[in-house]
Amino acid sequence: MKPQPDARLERILATLALVIIAVISLGNVVVRYVTNVSFAFTEEISVFLLVVLTFAGAAVALRRNRHVRISLLERALPKGPRRALIVFQGLAGATVLGLILWFGAKLTLEEYQWQTQSPGLGVPQWWYLVWLPVLASLLLLRQIQQTLDRLRGKLNDES
Image (tube, one colour):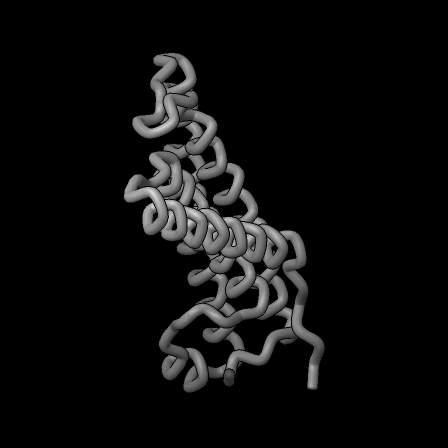
């Protein structure tokens, strides 16, 4: 059995996000039960951390070649056309992630310039948004790594 490619940074980030979500949600439930008032910040922080968790999990799945795709055509093709299809898939994924990176960076810059405040905590909105291009960059790196690994035959596409 081949060892799985690692995405340690993303695994740590996803774990931290999940633990923090669980802790603040539990804390909010306990406080609401005891005082009949809930913390205002928990929803804002939880939504942000869910986005981080989603991007980090997607990066781990990309690195380990575990994203869902229909590989019937891919398995049926001879080696040359299969490689072309893998390149096409990699370029399509990289294009989408490049667009997320570009527009995420543009939105973050606009929010920074406009000095928009978040609705719950009143912190600068760009503090949350800056993670969109950062995590999209990480996903783009993992997309490139996965495509190169698949072209080299290092990843098992049968799973």
